[in-house]
Amino acid sequence: MKRVALLAALGLTLLTALVVVAVGLPSSPGEEAIDLLAVAGSTLLVAGLFTPVRRRVQRIVDRRFDRARYDGERMASACSVRMRDAIDLPTLTHDLDVTVREAIAPSDLGLWLRGSAR
Image (tube, rainbow, N blue to C red; front, side):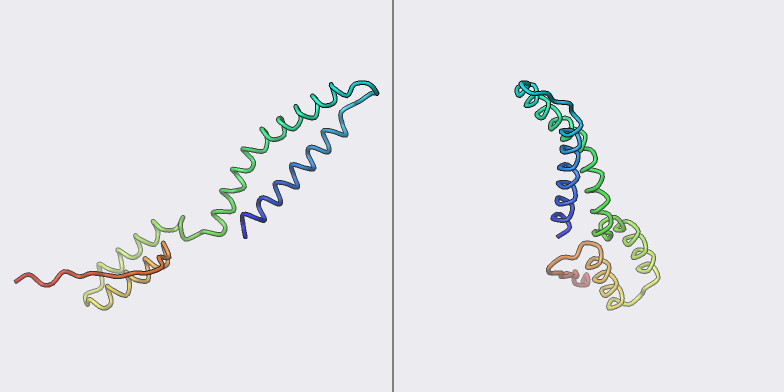
């Protein structure tokens, strides 16, 4: 959904820029070849200018809608601090489970524990 909104906004901006450039170019009768070159050139110019803008907007959208990916390091360090203080295994298991689910949202999660050494 976020990509659709992003592409729609960039497409509308690109179309607006092309119309502004095409209307702003002076034209006279009999210069159809030059007009075609001007339109092609303006299209390439606008596309070249919007590639960096699209990348920046995509990064902003990713940060806005996928915040857990950028907060993963903070979540891991907070979990390690809590794990140092926890003593019992069920608390450690629950805390690890919650941290992993919030950080990377796996479809399935399991924790294997090694048996005690004999």
